[in-house]
Image (cartoon, rainbow, N blue to C red):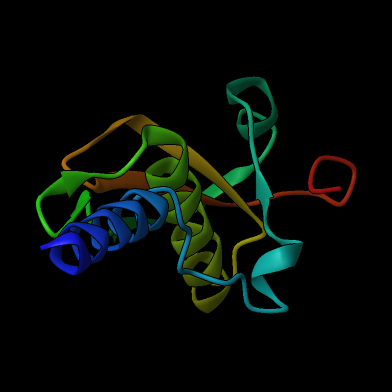
Length: 112
C-alpha cells in the first residue's frame, strides 16, 4: 500500500509539473518575428491571419494561462514567417487553448 501511495504522489506531482510546461520552440526565423502592440501594428501592413491552438489541459488538469499564452504566441510567430511577416498582434484573448493573430509586415524601425 505505501508503494501505491508513493506512485500516486509521483504521478500527481509529474502531472502538476507538466501543466506549466511549454512544448513549442520558436524556430530561428520565428525568433525574428516581434509581438506587436496596437500602436506598433498601426505603422505596419497587415498581410494575413493565423490561428494558433494548443492543449488547454494535460490529462484533465488545466494548464496555467501563462504557459498557454506563451505557446500560442510562439506558434503564431512561427507561422507568421510562412506568410512573410515580421510581426504578430493577438486578436482578443486566448480561449480553450485557441487564439487568433494578425500577421504584419513592418518597417525595420518597428520590427526590432
